[in-house]
Amino acid sequence: MTKSLPKLACAFLVISFLASCSSAKKREPASLTKVDDKTISVASVWSSSVGKSETFVMRPVLAGDYLYTSSGNGTVSKIEVLTGKAVWQVKAPSDISSGPGSDGNVVVVGSTKGLVFAYDSTGQKIWEEKVGSEVLTEPLVLGGVAVIRTIDNRFIGLDAKTGKRRWSYVRPQIALALRNSFPMVPVAADAFVTGFSGGKIGVIGLSSGSLLWETSLSYPKGYSEIERMTDVSARPTLLGRRLCAVAFQGRIACGDVSSGNLTWTKDFSSHTGTTQSQDFVFAADEKSHVVAYRAADGVEIWRNETMTWRDVGEPLAVGRMVVMGDKQGYLHFLDQNSGQAISRVRVDSSGISAAPIVANGLLIIQTRGGTLSAYRPN
Image (cartoon, rainbow, N blue to C red; front, side, top):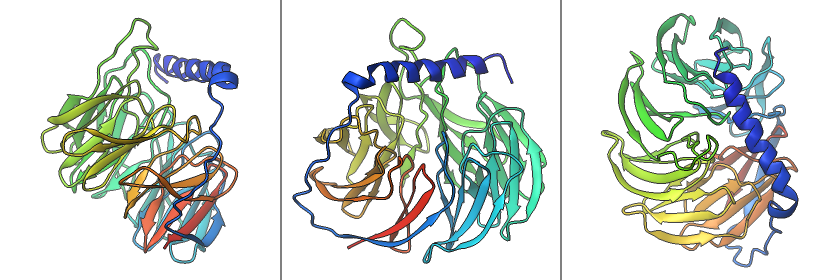
């Protein structure tokens, strides 16, 4: 573990402490409002238990007709999309701190102890590798490479079949950073985009681990290290060549994924990310106010403040809806054009941090309590 890791942990603890101190007066979640315009119905299709996420964000990953999930106690599962039935479940040798990465042939997960485990499509463990420090980000498995991102700002490219190290890319350390997952998103068959601490975002080549481009999405402001902390920790989103991302205590922006040139930016703060439709970009800020921006120029179209302090999770734009969960296990459906609530269901009583997945006409959600559920909006 490097010397900077205690600083990372301290930043997380300080933010958690400040939030808890103010929770009694300032962070009381808003009461649920009545859904007057219930123009869609949401039918439950199946539900399964895949194990609790504990304190981590576990995002399921879709590969073909199957979902792969993980839980904090080390359970890795392969689930049929249409039925929710488990094809297999295995127990990793250690607790798991990240969601899985998979290309359908190999499933890879990481742990707080710096161990990475890989399984084949039948659930057999095929390799295990030490990467030196905690893995909070789900691995990216693409083009025969499993990319591992560690909490100390290292990217490690492992051979997906053998676990043999191919390359390593190290980012500069900064004084304070969020102790959080920094997801990696493919932009082509040989590159991926991700956010960095310090308000930057960039694209890394898959075969070499080299940085292809990097740009500043936001800039540190304030006097203290906590005030100046601005991390692009949420998942960037792509629609064609349009790349959008958001920073904690920073800005939301969209630009060209080929060059990194930003088309527009707006002051914003979020650690849950963006989602896009053809015309709009959606995000929820730290207060759980959901905002829609015009994708072309960043003009604000609407703002929904009815879910204040409900700690809504990563959003998803699908069809005419924007869908996101909250800390009480509710899944909220908003109209993309107006921001009005058009439906709501409760998955369970635990929080929903990860965005839903769309597969075979189903919306699939994994809660922190370990419920994996599929719904069909009509």
